[in-house]
Length: 489
Image 1 (cartoon, one colour):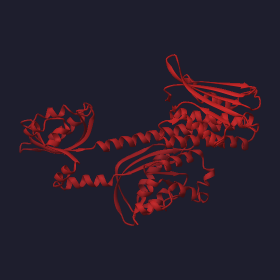
Image 2 (image 1 turned 180 degrees about the vertical axis):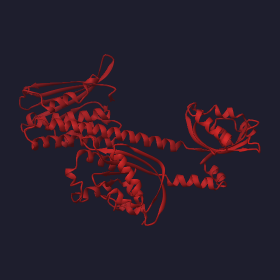
Image 3 (image 1 turned 60 degrees about the vertical axis):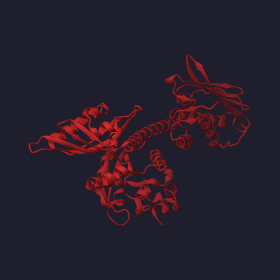
Image 4 (image 1 turned 90 degrees about the vertical axis):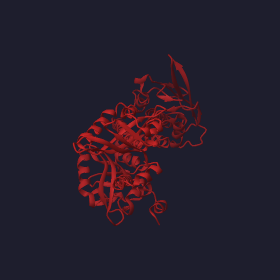
């Protein structure tokens, strides 16, 4: 059975993490894990990229399914191990990673060479590695989160090309290389094959006959020209190998990323005579690198935002509480509501969320699936991720209060949740009404609790949002107004 078949038949990492006996480790049982650790584990397990994290005094490993495939025969035995013991052959490297991230600094490596024993024998591998510190609720680094992308295949392919020049024609036919050129330096005539000419949007006939080098340089992105000129100058003056990545303007005004490599030959007096080389299409690689950087930045942003929300919820839930037990119950309920909102966002890849999905999630989380106690109506409206989290928390507080004191209690009342998009002062505004009916009369509280303040403040009034709450004999009524484009239709 090969690795793919084995991965398809074995339990996934979500199951393994839940089934693992963490109570015998320094991390303790899962139900006692701090929220920062839970959030990091959720992010790791839900990612399609190979990700691994280490946490706690023993730097214990937790990883996802994609990383399990990378680990080869070491999986599933890596789960819960100390990172130094998990990969003893690179313990010094991982010690440096631990020391750096626990000091609060990120690390990044491109094509990092390592020797790993993944399947019982040494393997030379190359990896793109990005590490960010993982912090607890007080901001103290407790471990790291890593994105591990193996580049061995690409590195080996590049090295094989340089070792075997005869592979150039094969690469040309396969489309990996998109052009070759020869520059007659004294005459300033560059000749190139038809692929090279088309990459620069030039006539292949003219390129085959020879054109001034400026005809090609004029098509290169202005921001890349200083580096191109520097590399050419170094090769011509010092005889250094030429290698440079740059963008070429295309007929549709887009830019194509390429990597050019070559060498300048010199005569006996050291004067440059000819400059030969080839060009490789690296567009997909560049897009992948950009996507990886974006993912790391988004990951940092989401973790920081989530920890900030959790810290605020914790501070307010426990402040002035009658008992630790009651505060913990309220705090846990709010965390569950936040987690449900994260579930909806994850299904939508953190782009935007339908307001109707959040309302439905709120009903399910309060055991009202299929209940007739909600009258829900409104157009298709999408919320930004930040507003989605705010709406989810507000809806949770409204539902919790309605169960305890209002129309969703034992008297059999209900709630109308209606929304529409209007316009005011040239701006589109989302209006949402929560109106309770059939329940007991509600009176204004002597002082505002955190739930009310959360409803009023979480929807960002600083950006012209507004929340109003009325205490009626028929039940509580709440009106929320949020301006677009914070919300997308």
